[in-house]
Length: 271
Image (cartoon, rainbow, N blue to C red; front, side, top):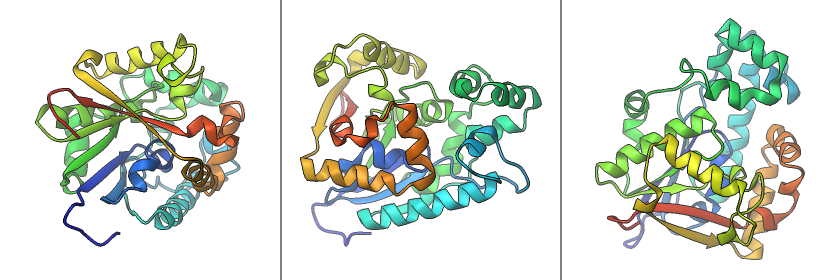
């Protein structure tokens, strides 16, 4: 962790999973602020099983897979010079595995994982539960939380916590979940054709729920060196880069795809 300076703020990045902070807020990790990345759903499940998603990533046991991902996260964030915190809540994949009917549906069609878990009320985690689990980690001048683009329940639930903190007057930035924001192309304000990207954003705000007009948008453009460093950092999540890159059509091989990061703040605050 960087040495504290008089102009530095204490920042907490709430990362739903082990890699989301690197993908979505690299500009925060590289800032002069004192930054901690709190990965919310980083709990290690009980040993003795492997989910369909972990098996597709080459794992033979999910507990071992999470421990490896945590080690990767420690290494990546150490290089970025920020402090990692791994909370003990279980990823939606492991919560779903405990439900036989949902587990069967996912094993039958792993490609539908997000739609299957997002549509199941048993999977969500209430804001109050998240708040209680993370309270010691939320003491900061600024909190960065995902907007929840893409529909994953873990991203959505952490976004709802961020919205709750903002409503209480906390300094909160809601960041665009990458690469979900650009899954179907960039919005017009990022030089794309809009269309599906606009729909994804509307769905994310509706799921909070929040009025998008109450938020001001800010786009941060990484310089070429920062963009290359970001992609190199993500590649160090060895079990994740290949599957995520394949899911997004190889887009993560190109630093240009991830060069622009986006955040929203409430118009009645300033972050």
